[in-house]
Length: 349
Image 1 (cartoon, rainbow, N blue to C red):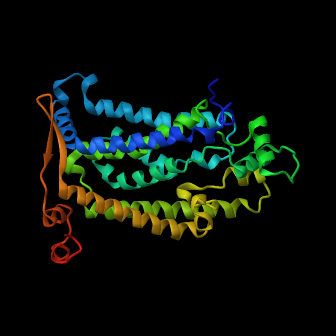
Image 2: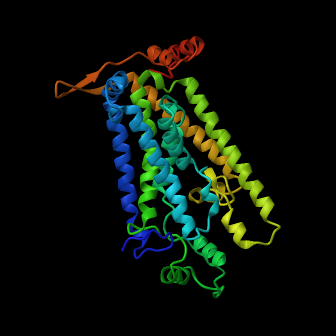
Image 3: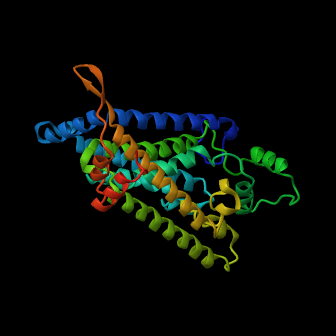
């Protein structure tokens, strides 16, 4: 049976994480394919824009983008929120789409609707990093903490001194907590939404070519965007907690224990105590900043190799047009001072 109730599943989600990992691998392979055929994608998009007013409304690429953008909004946010609320989802804070990956998906959808797809360059790195983190460590299976939250939220009476295995058995028999397996709608919504966050920013960036190049200026703006959102969600989570902690309403406390950007009290449990409040803000900031630079440097190395595949005359041609480091740095809008320093040093060889 297939369920739209977030509590129900006849399967054990933990046994099906391999499907999530397969999705991650397919997503990464899709990015590789998009990168290899980036020249064709750019040419295709330019051609589609050039014939906008020579074809009927149905065939106009901008209209299709608007339609797809609206569909993404409906699938990844509107329908999800409605289905969760129908069955009284305990974590109401998720109704605010401020978690990194969902925010990236909705920004991409909005860029498609309002014809600003060239702005995707600002979110391509945070979308890439956030999606890999979420799909590598999916938090959609049985968790003792979530089961306890659900029990308290529903006001269910049970023995306090129970083992974790007994608690899990209770969760399975009573449909408590999160257990999003393949027979549950939210399992697939989780995978597809995070794959959109992973792949869609790359697609929108590649089709715009030079108009959406991730250079050093857009790189710093991307970091600034991520840092400001992380700061905002950190203080938002802290502020909400302070407001509700003295009200004595346990349901309210559970419902609004926000963890957007993993900046809430629970933080990112994968890295232990350092991932929890208040250490999650400085620790995750440092980790993401380091990861941002790794991704950007990798991008420049690929630009230096300048390898791509070209579909021409029904054939796939292999192209490799290496560039010098001076060309790469210049195209990424580094200052002449830094270009001279880096090209003369042994850092770039």
